[in-house]
Image 1: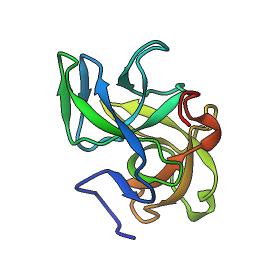
Image 2: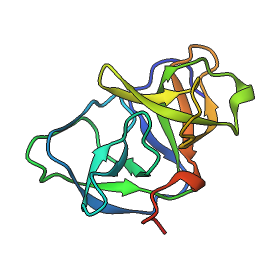
Image 3: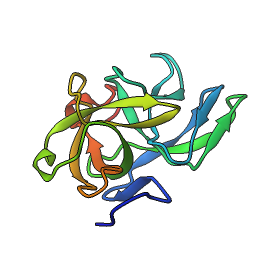
Length: 151
C-alpha cells in the first residue's frame, strides 16, 4: 500500500457494476473527497452526496470534482458489493485491527470521508488503510446497508 496523500480517491479494485444516474442540482463535490451517494428522495432518479447519518447509500459516484448547479450531469454510480473504494479519513485513527469492522461516513469542510470513530449507521466495511499517516482508508459498501432499490 502507498502511504500519504492520494492524487485520486474512488474505485480501486473489485467489481464495477453500476448505472448511469443524474446528479441532483446544487451538488458540489471536491476531487479529494469520497463520493458515496444516496437517492435525492424515494421517488427521485437523481443522486445526492451522502452525509453522516445516511443509511440508504446507493453507491459510489464515478467523477472527479463536480459542480452540478443545474442537475443535468449524468455519472456512473457503482453499487457492486465487491468494489473497494479509497476515501479520506475524516475522524479516528486507522489501525490494521480495524480491517473487517464497520464505520460511518462524515462530511467535514466539504470533504466526504470515513468516520473511523463512529459506527452508528455502519454503512462501510473497512478493508485497508494508511497506517502510517492516517490519510486514507479503503472501504466497501456494507451489504446490509445499501439502498433497498439496489439488487
